[in-house]
Amino acid sequence: MIEAPKRPVSTPGALAIATGRTRTERIAHRARYFPALLVMLAFALVTLLPLPAFAFETTAPTALLVDFSTDRVLYEKNVDERIAPASLAKLMTLAVIFDALRQGTVERNDRFTVSEKAWREGGAESGGSTMFLPLKSEVSLDDLIKGIIIQSGNDATIVAAEGIAGSVEAFAATMNAEAKRIGLTNSHFTNPHGLPDPEQYVTARDLVLLAAYLIREFPDEYPLFAEESFTFNGIKQQNRNPLLRVGADGLKTGHTARAGFGLVASAERDGRRVVLAMSGMQSADERASETRRLMEYGLQDFEEVVLIKAGEPVGEMPVSDGVVDTISLVADSELRLLVPRGSLADLTRTIIDNGPVVAPVAEGQRLGWIRFLRGDETVRDVPLHAAKPVARTSFLRRIGETIVGHLTWRSAKEP
Image: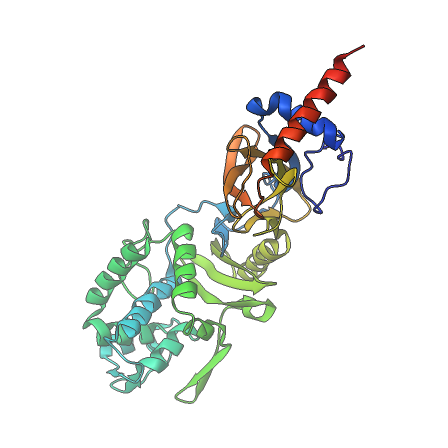
């Protein structure tokens, strides 16, 4: 802990450089030591503790939780292990469709024909999740998008793939090209629905990256992921995402015998959004409980702390030859850290000047920087500037102060 300064600080929360000297003593001090003046200040701040071991644990074989705005990993487990995507592959399918809409190569009212391949491999006969599209019928891309998101229709993905790219194989090539463009480095797609294929795989890391991409790049489309039901051709089906009823607003579930039960989800609370991916669970109930636990961990156990506010003084420096003795230091921008709620540690910060400050000083003039340290490691350097201008004193006043300081120093040395 830093001891309280011996005199009141002019700005609440500012760093005091006062030493308890009188004004005359300070003048004398500057007159004697001015050529070697160097100000370095430090105080304790709260920041992120290293997460304790087993702060959170899950039965899911793979899991990743990320803070959306900072990209900070809040929990990870086997995040780069290749896994079968199951219906989570549909997120990549939707990324391709949304990009095609954005590029104008397709429109929402475009109508595509339900082929026999789509009907047999993805329809009611397949035994998987389906939109129940009638063979040879025409369906709009808008309905197909809803069928993919809400009903997880395998038939809808095949119809969209054939309508946009001409074939499933051509669409899968587009999926892989788009995945590379987005930055997915450890995923490969062979079909738009995620049905088992030994050559098709993803990772939890890539799934979270993909989900964040969809949220950030397609804000007008993203609300569809929160729709709880969709009725097509007289058949109403419910969204399979169990977290929608407990605060999440997206994204997608997945399940096959090989992949187990998986989920990619996102939720926002009090201005903070988290994104998570989990896979390999043994049942829908385990998926619901484990993903909810992870979501709540991310939303409840962390908070943002503002370390510096833009324009708010964070310290002071002495000024020589000025009409005032000190000048306040401010940063141009706000600095935030995401910290575990209730588990804060000490982060030290040191204010370092660029050299002695001599008036005149212009408002906004760079005077130094504030360095945040964790042990010997520099976490961040933030430039500091003069909060206000400081004019230079008159020549006669400077001479007078120097003489007074010299006489005061001499008198203090005499017995």
